Amino acid sequence: MKLENREYAYIPLAKLLDYLLSETHPVGKSKAKYLRSLGFNEINVNLLKEGLLAIARSEDVKEAISSSHGVKYVIDGTLQTPSGAFIRVRTIWVIDKDMERPRFVTAYPI
Image 1 (cartoon, rainbow, N blue to C red):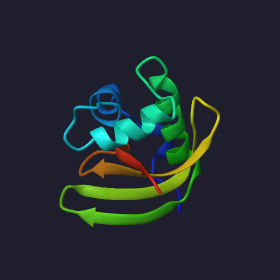
Image 2: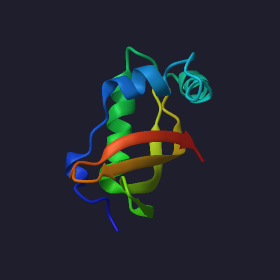
Image 3: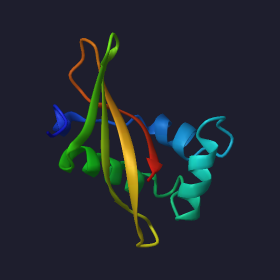
């Protein structure tokens, strides 16, 4: 199964800059350290954004979890780093109740 409305998936820039690449975020700092070690940063944040969106648009949904807030989707895929390496990541997306567009929640290495 593919992500519903995957062509409309989006990632707020603040989610990348203030969470995934933030070395001071209480939850995201370990992810930031890892991603920065692979060459991701504020200058090339679009590479990270486009790589994550490509996973949402092309890979199969591994798991869909319904709640009163909407449906959360787990999608695994491969992300190319600025250094040219490829890493496997798990991405989490949500389609909030009464919404249609999948919104990026998080990503982490697997």
